[in-house]
Length: 305
Image (cartoon, rainbow, N blue to C red):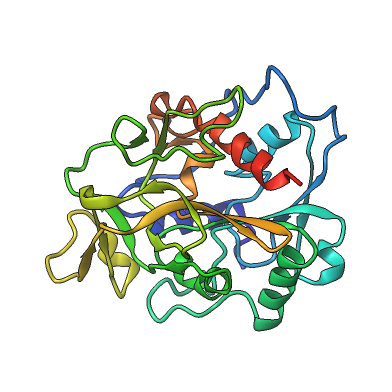
């Protein structure tokens, strides 16, 4: 398991060779304040954050902005280490897992499942029967493969590859472009989302009852490497790929008494500075002005009765 700051940075250098040239850190200048909060300070429900499945992005590290935005909205946050149990989930309203990995020491195929069958059934029962909400955030291989069995339990088929725009342009999903849909998240009262920015990730096939948030489409290809090193840019012609048509990277799903949101890119909910030039990536990026509200809209939807 990766615990050190150096280990976390090394993970991203290895896993995102096409995008990351140096260590990334949380942006200390990111404005996480909220004009109108949902709850009073620490008066909201408990959001349980996964820290027990080789999750390289912690609430004290590169996902600090994620946690601070939720705390500014009044939510209580706690990190859970170790295996998931019904007792651990009992007091939580939302369970968040980000980029859980099966084996951080081996990023190549085959990718094993990081959650045990028992944990998957515990999570499913907590959502379906007890009304909990799951926010499953993953990324390109091997992250997607590591949680594919968990996603499949809710009907999602994750592609253990990595998505890339054919033209290499910034990945903007908007209503104008037609790749961001009108739904309960983007059309939240008083907080309409017209555009979000993402950074790669992967795609998946949603179950029939899911509501698509954002779709890849013909603008994308999803590469299927067997080794993480094959994600270097430019991608070799020998790496298999599929068209992005029919694939999505964000969706929500009512599930029994609970709810699920799956998003196949972890970067949109960070606020990072990368490299010696401190390039912005995540909610702090100029192209991502609505990403913070997008995050809040997802959390509010998951929090709804």
